[in-house]
Amino acid sequence: MDFIFMLTRSDETVVDCLETWDAIDDVGLRHAGFKDVGADTATLIELNRRMQAGGVTTYLEVVSTSAEECLRSARAAIAIGVDRLMGGTQVDEIMQIIEGRGIEYLPFPGLPVGHPTTLGGGPTLVQEQCEEFDRRGCGGVDLLAYRATEADPIELVRAARRGTRGYLVVAGGVCTVGQIESLRGAGADAFTIGSAVFDGSFSPRKGHIASQLRDVLEATGG
Image (cartoon, one colour):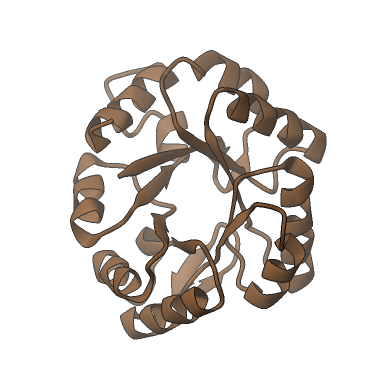
């Protein structure tokens, strides 16, 4: 299972993301990303360049709440040059914007609301939406399982796994080894962590961000 380190706190890219990345680029991360808020596009272009130069698969996660802003974020993904775009629900429009750009799209299943985002909807809805996303040619899904307000997180992961043949990412709220093990058992391909690394809560007895990251990688077997 892949660990995607998000250079974010409270659903925003940290303002010193370039310095942060330079301080951890020897940890061995293979997947990393950022949100479309918190840093300007020029900074994100440079961050993405540095990540990809190190062989890292890069991700932009949309946290905008309006349709217009989500489509603007899709255009930003092209300008930034990320490998994968996650989030949003305007599937047809976003797929049209990124067509031919070499960017995989992983939309939100369920009913995402607000910022920071919470997730409404149950397993049946999630499975049905994942099946529809597959039919539309999406590369997978971005499931906010641990931000669910109406269902058990692991049941949502199992439902998404039944519904998609693509890359199943669980984003938001992952902060323990036990959660990672549960996600692996439920069929997730990857998970994201941002705040739990920056605030030190993943490994509370360790103080350096690199130590937090190494512990997360160890929990994945990486």
